[in-house]
Image 1 (cartoon, helix red, strand yellow):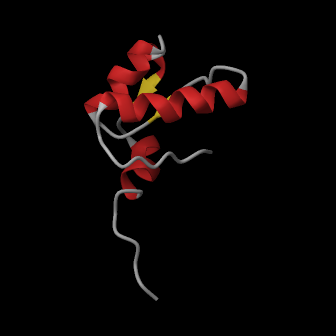
Image 2 (tube, one colour):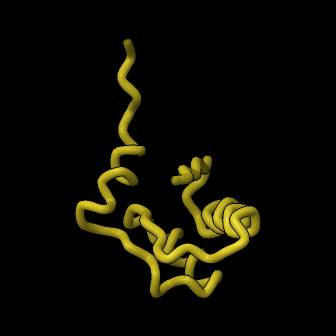
Image 3 (spheres, one colour):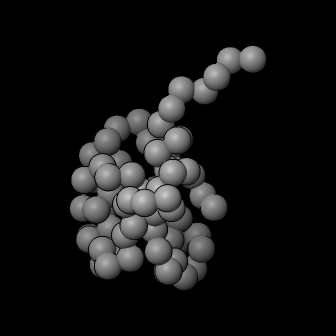
Length: 73
């Protein structure tokens, strides 16, 4: 599992890490799980992977929890 952290929330900032990740893996994943941010869908459609985009349900819990603040110990 790879977690991508980006400073902005637009299509260009979503496309660059996805492209680098696909290039380093050497193959296309079966599915991509993200939150419902529209820039992820736009980036995946540019990479021709729109049919494999999962945004909801229990599979998305890990993506949604990554946006929560980190608790201090």
